[in-house]
Image 1 (spheres, rainbow, N blue to C red):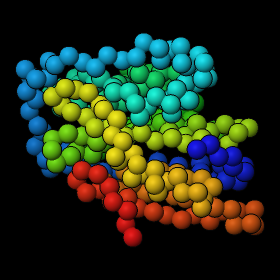
Image 2 (image 1 turned 180 degrees about the vertical axis):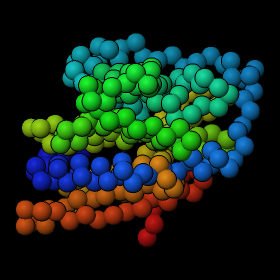
Image 3 (image 1 turned 120 degrees about the horizontal axis):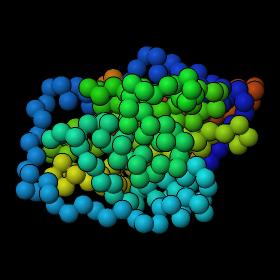
Image 4 (image 1 turned 120 degrees about the vertical axis):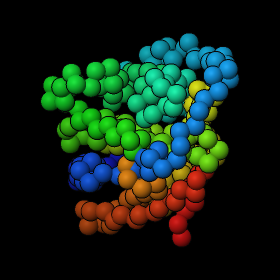
Length: 258
């Protein structure tokens, strides 16, 4: 799903990203505030963790130094172990687990560095903006330049006691434009494992990867619960048109708003 954009389109994406950052976005925080935290059955929580692949480093060397292609190829196939600090995992726990499995992608590197010591993280020196809203279950790591390169994550509380974790990344570059990717995981608090959720992935894929459009962008929610999909098409006048689609949260997955 790789797309090459004009400079104007890439700069427009950055403008959209900046507006999103300043205005806020999101979702499951309201669930976190209103729903009682589920108690973890400690006997079950001690279940054996899923073994992570030993070949991830070798794949990173083969598929590129930033590891982005590894994530795209492996992300929807490999479970992720989570080690929450408390009884209930939060967005920092999910981000540390995901970025720890795929640390060769630059925004993930910066996020891991931030999570290790948030107060010591120097955004100006790192040339990355970190935004973390723990109560609302949202975190992002964004390159400061006009190149749109980032990792954004959030989660939703499901009715069955699990959590749905969403990841949206854009591996923008100066020469080849924008290369977006998204992943979704079901987190079971008893096993403490994020398992790829292919059903949710397919719902989002059907909307985002529409062949009638040249590019797409996902806005994972920081405020509210729905996902907004922006679809871009060339209007023939050195510009582009944006078609906005909304995926409404149902309490378990998403449905496209007509």
